[in-house]
Image (cartoon, rainbow over all chains, first blue to last red):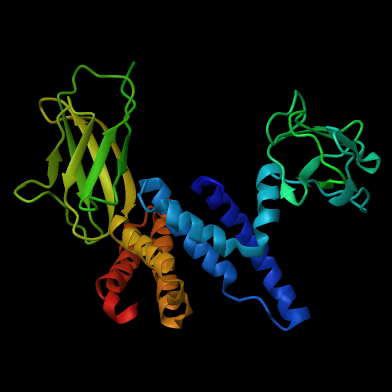
Length: 175
Length: 172
C-alpha cells in the first residue's frame, strides 16, 4: 500500500487521467463512467492534502479511501509517478515508439530473462506471476523484490534468492 | 549585516483560534528594541486579542515565535510586523497577506472522514454539490491572497464558506 503522500500524488495523476477518460466514454460507450469522478478525486485529495499538512491522526483511513477512489487508473498513475517526473518532448512529424508491452514465460531456476525487442528502452513496469515487482534499479544487484533492468541487452534480472519458477509469466512495459 | 525582515504565519487544525507567527529575519540592527504586529482585517479594523487596547500587539524580541488567540472563524488578514527603536522609529517593516482557513478546512476534512465511514453519503447530490461549493470558496480565498493579496475578496469567500459550515445541518 502506498504511503499517504504517495496516494496524494497518485490521486492527482488519476484525476487528470479520469478527466481525460470521461469525455471519451461519453462519446464511445454512452457514458459508463461516473461523470463526477475527476471532480470527486480533486475534492478528496484536497482533504487528504490538508490532513497530511496537519498530521491528523485519521490520515490512514482517508488515504485508503482516496486510493480506492482512484479505481482503475491506479496502476498507470503509479507508473507515471515512478517514471514520468519530467515532461516528454514532441518530435515534429512523429517517429519513435510509445509505451510497449512484452511478455514471456521464464525458465525455471534462472534469475534473468531477456526481451530482445526491448533493447535500449526504459523499463516502466514489470510483473512476475501477475504480481508487481518492487523497485526497478538500473545498476547494482537486485535484492528482495527489486529488479535490475539492463537496457543495453533488454534483460530483466531478479534477486538470486527468488529465481523464476517453472513457466513463470513475466510482463514488462517499456518506452 | 543589516536586518532583512521576514516572518511566517501558520495555524493548526486543533487550535484554529490561534495564529502562530515566526520571525525568520536575518541580520540585525542594534537600534531595534521592540517589535509590533498589526492584523488588518478586510473591514479596515485591526484584530487584537481580548484586553488589548492598541491597534497593535507587542511581540517581545526574545520570542522567535508568538501565538495570538484572535480568531473565531476563518479570516483573511494583512499582517504587518514592525521592528522599532526605543523611540518608536520604524527600522524595518514587512506586510504579508494570509488566508487562515483551519476552521473550514478541518470541517471539510471531516466531511471526507464521514465518507470514509459511510461511502453512501456521496450518493447524495446535496452532499457533493455543497461540498464542492465549499471547496471552491476555500480555493478562491487562497487565489485572492496568492495572486493579489486581496483580503477583501478572500474574506468574502471565507464568509460564504463559513455560512456553509455553520449551517451544516441544512446542507449535509
